[in-house]
Amino acid sequence: MSNAIGSQGTTVSIGDGAGGWLEVGEVTNFSGMDGQANEIDCTHLKSEAKEKRLGLQDYGGVSLDLNRIFDDEGQAAADVAKASGAVVPIQITYTSGHVQNFDALVKGFSHEFGVDNILKGKLDLTITGAVTTTKPVPPAPPAPQAVEPEVTA
Image 1: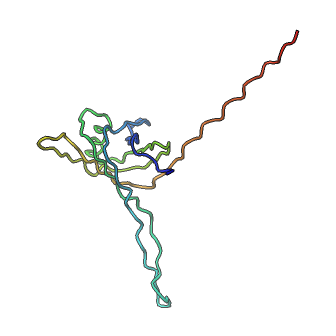
Image 2: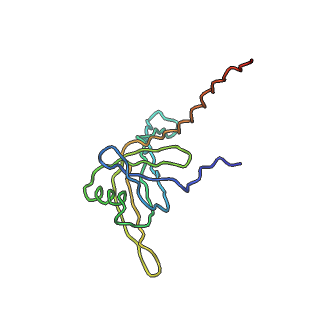
């Protein structure tokens, strides 16, 4: 049996500016964290072959496809962040209970619509800094139940 994590039920949230979270509504697809570190050439005159090291990790960006809803608080917060250029906290909560947090810039928020379709959008985020992943907290074991002494007459 596979241990793959199902994607249905995963949520993406944006910081509300007061320490809380606003879920970005009706996300239909997620892709990203596609960055990579630069290769730094460290080759010198005594090298026998090319020598390389990695530079700083770059987590790249994230794209969210969604059903565009102007009254959705999470989508509205993304609009505000795009207009201001502010760095915003993003949180992804997976169905496994794992949570990923990172800061991002809202690079774009495009619309798509046409005949016999609904208004859709694509939210493009650029990750700045590191991505942290938190494992789910296992449930506490049940408390032992008190055993009542048996009364004999």
